[in-house]
Length: 409
Image 1 (spheres, one colour):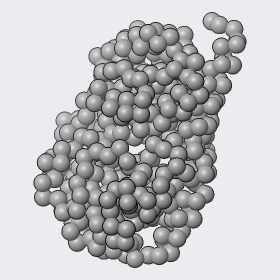
Image 2 (image 1 turned 135 degrees about the horizontal axis):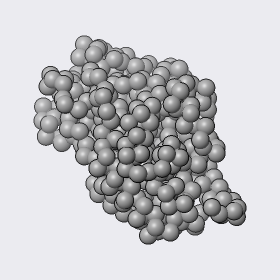
Image 3 (image 1 turned 180 degrees about the horizontal axis):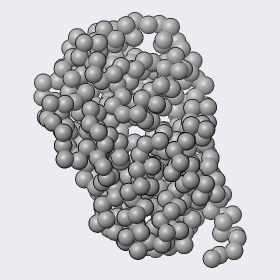
Image 4 (image 1 turned 90 degrees about the vertical axis):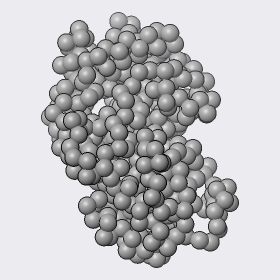
């Protein structure tokens, strides 16, 4: 079987889980190519996954909270910048971007001879696949169906029509199968209520919860002591990991936190993400500053507390690896993700507006909470046993093989 995987890229979340899926598919004998923005090719290529370069929207620059409202306030993936209203029209609906995306994706599908296309937020992927007569699937969290998917339907679908895409094709933005990279206990379909999202989900053949898809199988990640040895950390000193996402949309919060870290009673590690130049945080107070790391799960395992923006990948890494977390969410999906950790008793949420006065005392209290640590470890012991990447890869290949046996259009 030949598989083309199309992740959207600005932060690494979509690329990381797409790469993990690719390695699982390759382990089962599939030929895989990941089509992705040039800046993100290093991640799958470092893991032996073939890539192809696709044109992507440029990332929005870091916006400090005192800079005023920018002309475009929606992020590349539709998420609103903290403190700003969403733009009236998504950048994803730019007709030139859509035209180029369809052209490049279709050419890649033909060149590979793909049996199936798997899209991770690259909304044109299933459309390109259908135009080429190829089966497709989408990897997406259910929070996406509250925001921004209704706006994608509202803005992107008409733009596709104007580009000549038939209505029955443009109306199936999710492809044939939807994979939710989580468990239904955490992301129930009953929570999807927006009429546009409900209508879109009715166009797919199957919706499948596969469990968290992380960079590595949690059971293969070294334990805390080994992780600290590998990272060169003091085996006894407390460690706080701060990673507020890779899209630069939480830059104002990141900058505030960076200036407070010298008051935290721990060794602090600050990860800025691919779209934030560390030079913009020249006055940081972290013990270690990283722009990127290929070892996010190792750092998470080594930490006594993970400070996150509430992105799905970082929350699930902390939960599966049994680490307490403090979330500073900037938009609704991040608040929803972070709420899971609170509901499981493994963390807290702090509004970004309260970071300046409350961050340090909150971190001090969480670091000293032995009951919180034990609860996080207990939750991690349960969640680590379920690796979604394997389930997803098996289902993709089985479904594609079964489809190949049926009548062809």
